[in-house]
Amino acid sequence: MVKEMGWSDWEPWPALHRKSNHLLVKLLVSALFMGISFRLLFSHSTTFLPVSQPPAAAERTETPVVDAGDKKPEKDSPSIEKTGASEPSVSEMALDLEEQVSPKERCDLFTGEWIPNPSGPAYNNETCHFIEPPQNCMKNGRPDKGYLYWKWRPRGCDLPPFNAEKFLDSMRNKSWALIGDSILRNHVQSLICLLSKAEEAVEVYHDDTYKSRRWHFPSHNFTLSLIWSPFLVKAEIFENDDGESKSEIQLHLDVLDANWTDQYYSFDYIVMSAGQWFLKTAIYRENNVVVGCHYCPGKNLTELGVDHAYHKTLQLVFRFITTSDHKPFVLYRTWTPDHFENGEWFNGGTCNRKEPYKLGEYNGKGMDHLMRDIEFEEFDRTVVLDGPGSGARLKLLDTYQLSLLRPDGHSGPYRTFHPFDKDKNAVVQNDCLHWCLPGPVDAWNDLIMEMVLNE
Image (cartoon, rainbow, N blue to C red; front, side):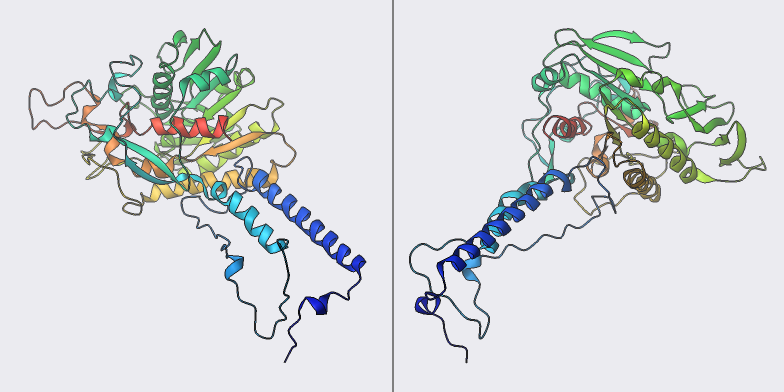
């Protein structure tokens, strides 16, 4: 049996040996503290963070925190009896430091649940006049109001509501752009409504179709631009506002859309996204030569699919961002799911749910997973190939899960003014892709505020 060692057994060791042990402990603690500080600084930054799988699907492995006071000595292990106040061991100090950083590390802005919010939205259709008719569900007669009283709660932390005054003060003399399709237009309306609580926006530009616009907040010299670029790459589009096309889209997979690249150097912050338009019939070109298509029966062309086009586009976009001399803060917003049931937008699909889904109740459609996986794959590729040393500030704004859980937040049949006034049983086309305002899309701006100002 191993003899139990008391203080008398320890005393004959020379004082110099004890001091060197203390020095060793201090060196170990210093190294440990530096390591944990490094973790805090880098491990959960979304800027060029390699992502092996989408955060919503990834399971975090937490290091179990053990109370050192409850740990029993192993059998036949020598125990050391000490008198007076004991110095904390390296492991105890490590546990103490780990407990300090764990709450922040456990925070996942993009995974969580919707919880009741009795205070309701920050604005309504009467306090904000920037809401366009298809998203103005309250004015259009939507009778239920429950969809207005929910708040996104991330896993492991609280998400403060958007603070318009703080945002504008921080963005004084800055310029923002939202670049993409009609969902970005939906998003910019939400942002302007939230900002209007602090200062009213003044529109200073719009194109002929009002798809590209610019607003100025004069008291803060803050500029907000909306740039229409549904593919982010060059596209020749032959359809009207009702989605009726007289010819196939011609998509140039090796040329970025000059509509946004020509203005890129004038922006300090950018939110961009694409995706939904890639589902449309299109002819694909590279070097101005037709290389294939998506859904073009009778054309005698190779079916390359939306995944081919979306991969190519994101590679081109991310490479432009990382190699450009200009380094704005860029958020790429992930795929936004629709919630059509019993059909699609063109054949009677509806979205009549009145409450959010619970986590795990609905997992999305095959196309949702395909497009989102492409986004993470190309972001990862950029991290490995172009990220190191580029100086680019590129992050993913992953709104997928919080959007997936809100089938109740769409315009539905209330994309038009009082659609059932004349006939309660009227067959009305539903919009289960864009969002009512106010509504779930407001939480996207809460995320942006946290990522940009409180990162």
